[in-house]
Length: 129
Image (cartoon, rainbow, N blue to C red; front, side, top):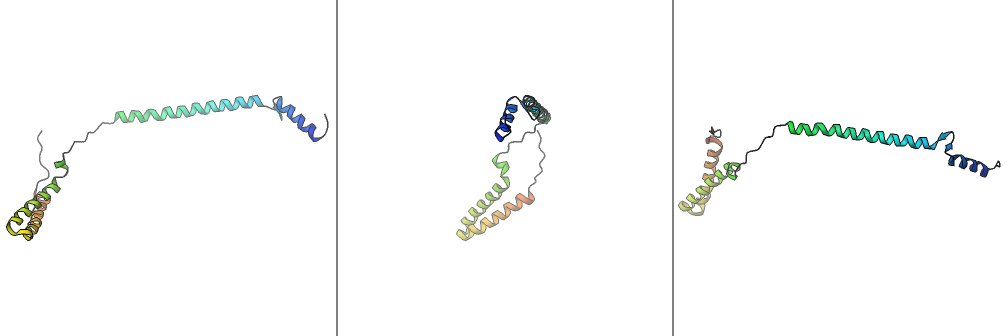
């Protein structure tokens, strides 16, 4: 072999093809990389398995609470009471005094309904099952 640039590159290529480059073995480094990949994969899977286990057991240990289904009347009782008294007051006022009486009657009815709904009516009734 010569002493020129081509001779040096040819000598490096022969060493590289043989598996030895600068004293290291390419086959052992590939084996080490594969082992590292398998170890990393096993660690990731173990982490996932142990993190999913407690999450699923917590949800089954909780007590379930069911919401009571409320009807439309139960949801909107206050608004419907005020609206009903407003319509009633407008009807009575309209019969008594025309358009102006209907306007005054609706205001009086709304005020009376609101007073009943928010101040007079008892909210905490005793329920017997």
